[in-house]
Image 1 (cartoon, helix red, strand yellow):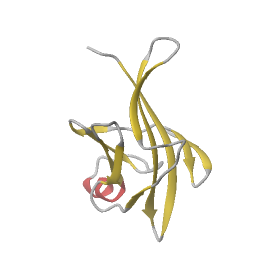
Image 2 (spheres, rainbow, N blue to C red):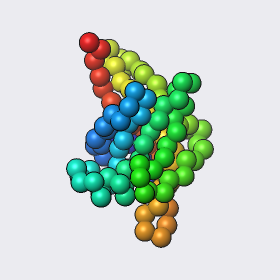
Image 3 (cartoon, helix red, strand yellow):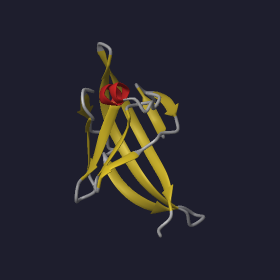
Image 4 (cartoon, helix red, strand yellow):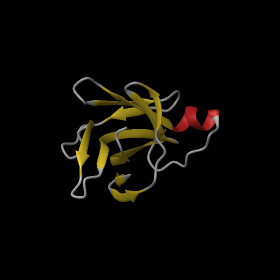
Length: 117
């Protein structure tokens, strides 16, 4: 992941888990992944890809999430091939999540390399 957290450059490695045919789960912002139910319920977001490749960003269980509008991060999913022929699944996301008493604004490019089998 690369992007911005409250306007400051942010980079991190993220784990993305498939939940259904068109939905994946990941930790909000740069929150560290832990395979513990209470941590996931309070800190994870769902990315639901619509038929038109728009992405709906929402809290997994208890996390409050606001999907935001940003032309550079338009909440979409797409596939790309880079100059070396590697294939990537790309999410461009704009959202804010509640952390304590305030919201953290995120702009993320989440890029996952894949091979077709």
